[in-house]
Length: 435
Ligand SMILES: *[C@@H]1O[C@H](CO)[C@@H](O)[C@H](O)[C@H]1NC(C)=O
Ligand SMILES: *[C@@H]1O[C@H](CO)[C@@H](O)[C@H](O)[C@H]1NC(C)=O
Ligand SMILES: *[C@@H]1O[C@H](CO)[C@@H](O)[C@H](O)[C@H]1NC(C)=O
Ligand SMILES: *[C@@H]1O[C@H](CO)[C@@H](O)[C@H](O)[C@H]1NC(C)=O
Ligand SMILES: *[C@@H]1O[C@H](CO)[C@@H](O)[C@H](O)[C@H]1NC(C)=O
Image 1 (cartoon, rainbow, N blue to C red):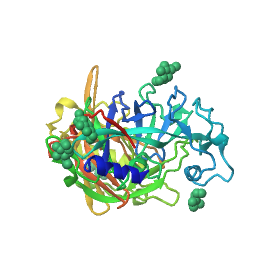
Image 2: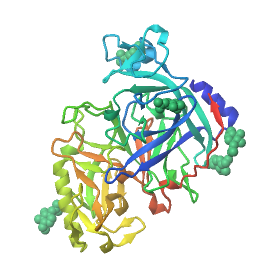
Image 3: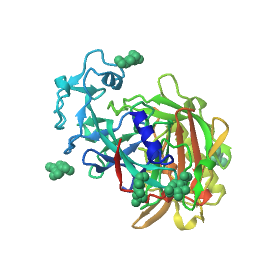
Image 4: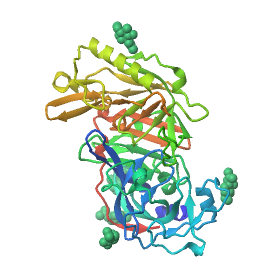
């Protein structure tokens, strides 16, 4: 398949060899979420999938009218099936592939491949993405043998997100079967840029190292700093004993959290991942705000309060779920958000991720309230991961995941460079090509 795609690009258009998709922000009160817009099935249907940076597989909700003329189960006992099951199951795990309300022919009547941990059916179907050369969008390319997981447990799958708009989950985790891995032919690089704009989408690039051109003609690849990137499966049992989707999540090493250049005094052990996968700093697109382990959270809030006092900022009544809020009309607005204590993450390689007001604070406007709140929540004292960097903190930052070089490229706020994630030119080409 890879060779065919590669040859096709040589013939069609050498520079439009990477892929692109919009990332849409759904504004739901205090729990916004992000979806990736792809095209699925035959005939192709535009589909919004919850953007899940750490998920192993791309999963679709099969309980809701899965109709496609090209879907078929991955045959049970095939090498692909064993690989999807990560060779974990000692017994053959097959199923009659009509179970999830998907009407598909039985694969050689041997049944379909069932994938752990939730015994869900693996399918082939078409997925299509637009090509890009890093500054413009090209035609739609169809991947007819895209491997999906067909879920009949949609509520767990979508983690309670509005089901009307979301039809599944786009898995970008460190896995051979993640969405980036399945559409990439020349590199193992993808990038995401979540938009902070209420209307214009952000963007995901697949199989593209550079350029990342945003209007007015700024190539963000020149503004990246790099820190080592790790992958780790996250223990999939939550405190309530529920099992979640399998995750091959991305971790970075944060060495110090600084507020107005002063390092927080926190237990260093919490910043490393132990042998059971606990601790460390993970990147998440399904947590709307950064989640801190309780002791880090408490120190963070105290230090931020101290620093904001020294800047003469006056606290207001907090708006749930946040702890520290300030009246909006009392804060000075800058190009990078309200002027509040500066937050910096010092990481491996001695690079610094600067977090300005637009990313550290969230604006809450309600009937008789207009405040900026510190967009950080308490993860409790039994947190699996000590620090989970959430969507709000990632907005208008470009993140490049280079799985070959095992490094994360990050831009810090693009607002510093007078552009933003909503500034990618999505002028679309409606030509469709199947590979
Ligand atoms: C199922 O989807 C097909 C194709 O999109 C559509 O024509 C049909 O009306 C849908 N059926 C139901 C029950 O929603
Ligand atoms: C998993 O199964 C595949 C296909 O059967 C095989 O090639 C591979 O070596 C196995 N991997 C492990 C870790 O056992
Ligand atoms: C991408 O393609 C457009 C339209 O063909 C062209 O104007 C632009 O210069 C190209 N950009 C790059 C980086 O190749
Ligand atoms: C869309 O892309 C195809 C293939 O690259 C090209 O032939 C066609 O002219 C493009 N159409 C538009 C409207 O840009
Ligand atoms: C905050 O200020 C108080 C009073 O000056 C001080 O005792 C405390 O250590 C400070 N906390 C942090 C985390 O800096």
